[in-house]
Length: 317
Image (cartoon, rainbow, N blue to C red):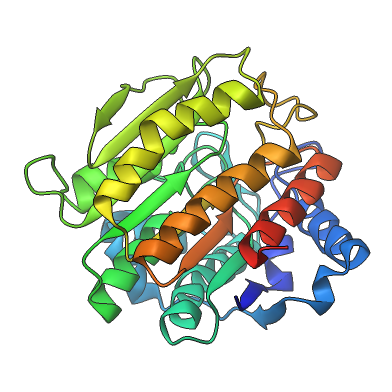
């Protein structure tokens, strides 16, 4: 299994304020932990390129794309609010371009056989960004962009997006339903699975076991065994039945017991378990192809250790 990491130092420059939890320190913590673990010598590392602006329309309206680009602050200007808790500073647009660029570059790396799987160490995250608006720390939806790009460029028929962030991937669901126009009767080749604490931001979510959307709410008291049971009962049968040719992971690590963003109590072992389960499905149906990208995770120690567990799972260590 050839596993890689893709990102860019410019992703660390986006800044929503001194005390905001979604900070460039997250990427530094991950990088430091990869060095301590020795994984920096094991995985192949790549720099992402800025995304071609035209590709953003694969998942977003032109109006939203232009809104973000046209209102990006210049050096010395005040921050601009794109949506609830999504502010741009003078360097944010560049961070966005490299973050979204990593998503499509990662697809190319697995589809041309350079890598079997790849983890995108990028920010800002994307899974709350809907087809026509940004919100919840997110501006453009990296996971949805990767899925649409893989379908457009490589002609894949079945792409699964799975999201184990502690917050529901409302943006990805919105894009699957309203931009990709996937329905139970004609799923357009997409399956979206999301687990999340409920009630918790973004709150208005409908539980679902009907493809193309599998929404799996978790109680605030959820611990590892309950999480594994929920995933085993709701996600895994749907994924095996779907037979994805590519799995895209929105990898949020804010359900960790040490992360005070939520009340769910997962550990590194739980993230390793779900990685192993997804890897087995990818190997059976999609030549092992996985593109994983960072979403949430705000306790720096828990985040960095969980990412290492996730990457070790992709490798098979």
